[in-house]
Length: 280
Image 1 (cartoon, rainbow, N blue to C red):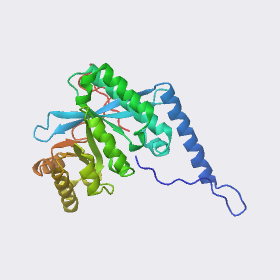
Image 2 (image 1 turned 90 degrees about the horizontal axis):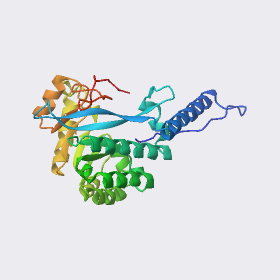
Image 3 (image 1 turned 180 degrees about the vertical axis):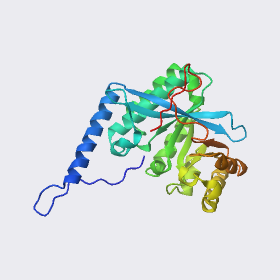
Image 4 (image 1 turned 90 degrees about the vertical axis):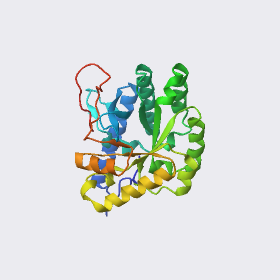
């Protein structure tokens, strides 16, 4: 969840604030207030997207739990509306803790489920996040072996030494780690060597339309080769067509995730009732 640099309101030639900057600042304040209220009221839930086995494309290897925050009317607030704004703030860490809490609850309720949830490297050392993990595993120790924590490549590279220590301690408890958005940033080989990620989720920017893009084919094959060298299970994100899925399966990718196999849903197969999409 890397954040681009943000600027405060700029002054015009006569000292007046830039109207566009002022509007952006008001929008960000409104977004922060909306996110804070949703977290305070626990107006949050997970949408689940399947990650399919390449050798058995009809069988999920696991599901990813994606956080959804709700406004006062119950409408889902699209993640793109708040993630960039909250990334460097405590609200971002609170979102990570809420995501983990909801994920652990789902794992406790569904003994056959394996689930991944996202976290930022900035949440390492955040006491409420660790308390959530400790309490969840104390209540249901078996959840550890079915939990996968996804850390984005850009986030891991902010503090690779700390990530390596954290991962070593958490993996000892049976929890797995995925390097999310692999290839989108600048992961060093030293980080891959020292962090021992269990799987690499190759960035969707190289996957969409891959069957007809020779350049992306080379990139994905190279990323998969690096991942396999470090004994990492490979997952391709953003698989959106049968043609792309067929290419990736032939290329030896282990798992596939994307709209071709299923959109994130608030009502996955293990729950009763009809499915409902929660993309956003």
